[in-house]
Structure formats: C-alpha cells, structure tokens
Image (cartoon, rainbow, N blue to C red; front, side, top):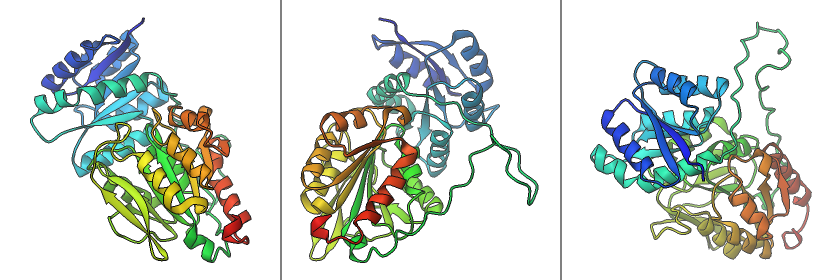
Length: 371
C-alpha cells in the first residue's frame, strides 16, 4: 500500500523533529521533508510533490496565511494547520480554514515536546483525513471596481443578497429549532448556511467538532457576518429565535425543555463517538425534546458522529437536510446519515439555506401539529 507522503513546515527545529518522528512511526505515512520557513517549503513541495503538508500558523520570512493563500491558488493541496492556543492563533486558524486548509491541530500550552507527542493520534488522524479530502482551488480576488462601475464577469463571488425575512412565522419561529452538525470542513460550510439565514429565523443550535479555545473566536466571527446573533452556548440560557448557539469546544451541548421555553444544556462528560462536543448528543436531544418542531442539517465531516441520532430525529418528526458528496470536503458524516435513512433531502451546500427557508415558509401557516 502506498504511503501518504507529508512535508512538515515549522520554524522550530524541535517541532519539526517531533512531527517527523510521529509521522514516520505510522505504517501508512512518511515524512519526506521538513522545512523551516515557507520559502524553503515552496521548493520542497515543488520537488517532492507531497500528498499533505502540515503548516505552522506563524512563520518567519513569509506569513503562514500568505503562503497558504498562494499555495491554494497555484498548487492546491491538503494542508493541516498547527495552531497555538491563543486568541491570535484562533483568529489566524479560522482564516486559514477560510483559505482552504482542511483542518488544524492545536498545540497545548504545556511544554512543546510533551504537548506535540500528546497530540500524536490527533495529528496523524487529521493527516489521514486530509489526504482523502476534496480540495478546491482558491479563486484570486477580483480587482476593485471603480465607483459605479459594473462588476466584471468571471470575477470574485458577488456579494450575497440580503436574506429575506421568513415573514409571519408567529409562534412557529419560537417553536421550531434548526440543528446543525459538522466536522472537517464544517467551519466554512456552517458559515455558508448561517450567513444566508434571515434575522427572524428560528433558533439554530450547532455542534462543530472543535477543541477548547477556538469556538469563542469562531462564534464572534460568525456573529459579525450573519444577520442572526451567534454566540457560544451557555448552560441554562434560553434558546431564542434569531440566535445561533455553538457548542463550546470540549463540552457537550444539548437542548432541554423548561415550561414553555427551550434551554441550553452545556455539560462536561465522556467523549461520544470519540468527540466532545458530539453531534450525537445534540441530535439525540433534538429527537427527544423538540421532535417534529426540529429541522436537522448534517454537513461535511469525517466519521459517523450524529448519523444514528439524526435518524432518531427523523423518526420523531424532524425534516432533515444532508450535504451532498460533491460539495463536501469529507463525505463521511453525511454519507452515514444518508445510509442510516436520516435524510429527507440531499443537497449541494449552496442550496441548503434556500431550501430550509422554503420549508419554513411552507409550514408557517400550518398548525404545529401538522408540521
């Protein structure tokens, strides 16, 4: 079996050495080069043609993001970012995912050598996933048009049209809840759904596989882009229409009923399907508590987390959307949801928000008992 070839890019000689050791210990992968900066990495990638690269977020000589942006335009390939557990590290990592990096691993704050070795399983798992990911070339930005000039054909993606109100939802907006599960590639996929939702849509509860220290920055980024308000979920808070709630990294997120209200439950616990937060936990609560007033969305991700619970949602009356293979970075969780019989519609990513709104509009005038 051909081994997955990897080039490590990191300015620390110690980190390069440890990552090389970790990779070469795996029977199915090989580190074929280690570069101390992006300029050396560029030549190494050109000469060695690796399957995957690991890239430190903060690099000398050329900013890691500048390097990644050029790479994804000129020679798109799977990239796993190695990030720092700082606010700056989180912001840069989220930008890297936007530019096309497949995933990231976070360096713990403990000693570098011990911390990297402790992440050996996570690093090698993500390299394996990245080697099979669907990689797309990053489009070059169009030059800025003069004031009043028409947009050039074939240029940058046109700005999104404002999300139109769902209108006349009344009690439906309060009763309905949208549930989203995602993993690898999901930070951008979730953004693409949320950014197209109107301010008056039902509450959105999201579990994205992400470690502690990153979800707060992710929520803040989404909050600045979306018409709904987006935040990290807090234990005991009321789930409100027009708001998005993201499971905090390292904590499970579920929904409970308190009288006439839904509330968030954020708790520690054992990993479920090897994940914490787990989509299974959130979707099971949707099936148990929200039933026919839930709408489910399964987005790109590796593995099967949430598939069985999404089928439980459907059995309880939920209407479910699943992202199709062509637009997924990794068609794992969506495939498993489809195979479990959990999907009502399988759609390209760019159609999910539109169909979700159409579904809400079509049920807005109906009795909740018939939705």
